[in-house]
Image 1: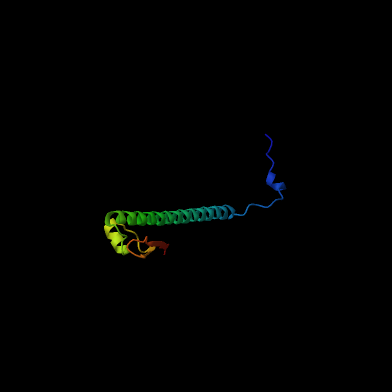
Image 2: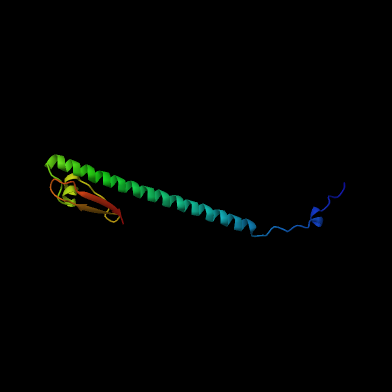
Length: 113
């Protein structure tokens, strides 16, 4: 039986750093956490935009319904909310409701806070 030569004896390269695997694992973990955070932020922004669009649509539908039932536009936002049952998160959105007259279409603006 012949002895197996020791190949490390003639190896002149660098030996692997003992913390290399740990650093690589931490880097991968941080990248994955960053991507997850970016994804959650994008989904949250998209959801908020959809909520805003839905609120605007509900307000205009309510104004139209109120006019069809009463023969005039609602004088205040509270009248519209009470009659049509519109509810929204006042911490997320500010609704500016400006009426020009009983038979003039109101100006409704929804602003994100």
